[in-house]
Image (tube, rainbow, N blue to C red; front, side, top):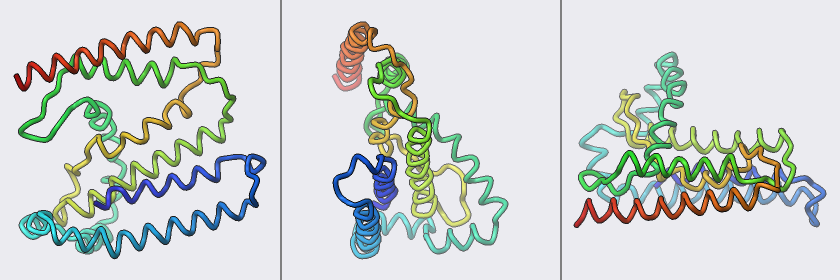
Amino acid sequence: GLCKLPYLALIFLLFLIPKDNFKTPFYYNIISFLIVAVLGILWAKFYATPNYMLSYRAKYFIEHNVSMSGQINYLAGHLPQAFVTFANAFDYMGIVLFGMFSFSFPPFVYESNLFTLLGLLFVGSVVFLYPNKNELSNKLRIGLLLVVLIVFFGTFTIQLLNWSSVGILYGVDIQSRYFIPLLGLLPLIFGFNKSVDDEEKVNKIIMLISIVLLSALVILTVCRWY
């Protein structure tokens, strides 16, 4: 689906790498950016969008009055409401975060508050506790954060235009699985622990949490399905 399109923004990471780290001229990055942009547009126009109408989505769109052009026109005609909608997009971050540890789709969803807590502890330990051996500038961290926000709001926009009924600007279908790749950037943005001496201790903590997390997943799966 089109929700993959915002991940083209990861190409901006090329511009966050110092020029001195490249053996090739910097304009190669610009060429790469343009190639990715063109490929993304072609993929969306000639593959993703046409295939929408060949799947179950076509029936859903008709039944629920889903129209990308119609939604764009509605937003353009109701700018204050559109502004509030995008401002409220941050409310979905909690849903995304806690939904990382919910599995399957309704009515087969299985989840556990304990498992969610363990999952958050695991992510938090990797992001905040693991020692960062390389000094990252604030400029780089801000750039990475902007890329994450571009992907988040890009996904939100696509789901708003492509899955919500025309005129319905709430209850946007945002699922945590769309943002799993972004987890890899979080330690680079929020990892401020520079104490290399703590690495062995942190490794043991993360390993312990991982074992407990996987054990909880097995127990949760057995309790849900067996």
